[in-house]
Image (tube, rainbow, N blue to C red):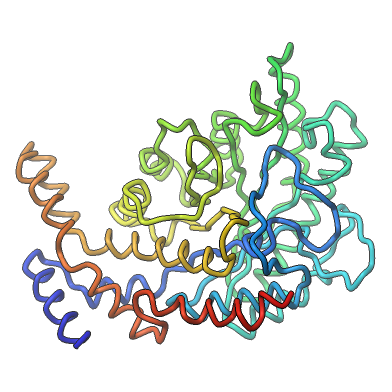
Length: 415
């Protein structure tokens, strides 16, 4: 019956000049970087304690992963319910040191060897992020911009070490890793000096990125943020700072969809950046009133983000990753919901007659453009998505939740 539904949907889309088979083949090759930190509320394995740096995971749903083995098991279940082959995004605090206390500035590729083995066995790529929060040297809400050189040097060394880890990922897995730098630096009250911390941050980044690493193995990106808890009045790494730094220093500008003012839309920023950068990066989340890192849902802004990527022929130019951490619901389900929704949004965009819509805009035929945009909303998109799940051997519609329910009953509830 599902095949019949797909054939009917295929016919309707063909009337608009859309080849659904081609769209599905394109989507199959899009890799989304799934963030490991959803599985354990950004705890990591070094025993650093509570989160800091203006971020927080709320909720106490049972079943949180506390060991590498538990986290990998949870990731396996999630990936079994998500169509396609993707990437896994790691933070430095997920180094596997087998009980040895290793300072973050001394971490080496060997401490991530088990993750590489995990990725190889599953055909995954890996990305990396230095972890500049939840640490005694981040207690003053300043890291790479700290006035104390000893503290700055520690974090510079840490970021350099993570670039080496990222390069290792790229060499071992045959696909480039993304190394993304985000820092929590800022002030709660209005600062007397805005430029000084940014001068220090610039100098730190220059030192971190001074060694050139082949993009066959590694891309570097910098990530801005509007504000965080405890740094409400001033953020050193603002969007303007990083956008200019990225443009001048040939690194990627990463946009997190929760890191801007609630009235700003990341979708509107993509075309401008793509004009000036060969590649850019995304962390997709869902902010509710602020950067609250809610699970990604199939909402209009997500579709607009996907549409901008597809319309600009940029599926191979945008590193797409997810970034949220919800401890109030089943963590495995949170991964699956977010990943499948990101794929749904991309598919929805791939099924739009974007060339015709661009032509209507250029002609000034906004009436027909609006009509077409609205009619697309009631086409049988869901039947095309169901077919995509079927041909990728993952559960169709809500049947994936049965697997999560069984896993919670048999594994998560016993932790």
